[in-house]
Image 1 (cartoon, rainbow, N blue to C red):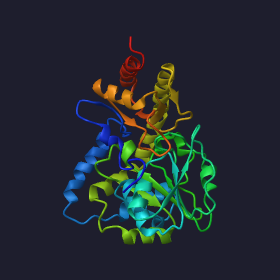
Image 2: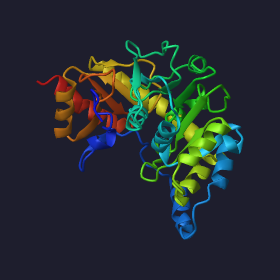
Image 3: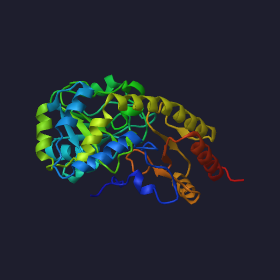
Length: 339
């Protein structure tokens, strides 16, 4: 796959033993013990083939959808691969900067991809009228920008598939701009359970879409692609208990994110305004050199130059607790402003 940036580079590539991880956006201290216990217990059922029916019902109930509007997937990444295999767009448009797997999956399936590059404050603008497939993240990785639901919904129209990656929507208290419960022409919402619940190694997510498209995606999906533990996790993570815990975390995250943003601004750095996810996008002079210097001091951050629309002076920094942030900012200050 030849592109101008490495679309397959992700935050986990930045992490190595001994480094404090500010590169991956998975919530620390997860999965919580109650969820870990359920996963351990699920091992007793591994002799049977996985049955998604119960988890599918739970996800449908959580979003006020019918069961035939839900497809469980092995994380959001599988959802993008399935969409790329099933759809045959005349003009596919990916709104960047955003998570690169949607474009990567389209290209791997042989589709040509056009890019709409947002700049400035990375707010949503128009897309080409003739685009019959549009992919966008909300909140967007890596900018942390949350687009108003009505602006995103305004991209939907008959004859167009609109794919909205809401992997980080549970970072937003109340999920105020989610389209997960909406029924719009061609709307596809992709959700992930990886980030909030610490399940990157388990692979758990789902698609919400019109029944006819869900049926086509299911036909293209390998049999039993979602494991029994992942199905147990999916059902548990949409339970009232889990939703209440996620909401409390999202509210705490707001305080931690504002603390980190203020500290970075205090160093004279540009932080993308209005961040609403579990990370910040920061413009840092000589970003690649700074990233390497931070690695030498024990900190991993995500380079920004592998996101279309960003360049080498951009870094993505995960939001962490107050103590970790204070230590990180001190090291970053010494890199930026040596005595």
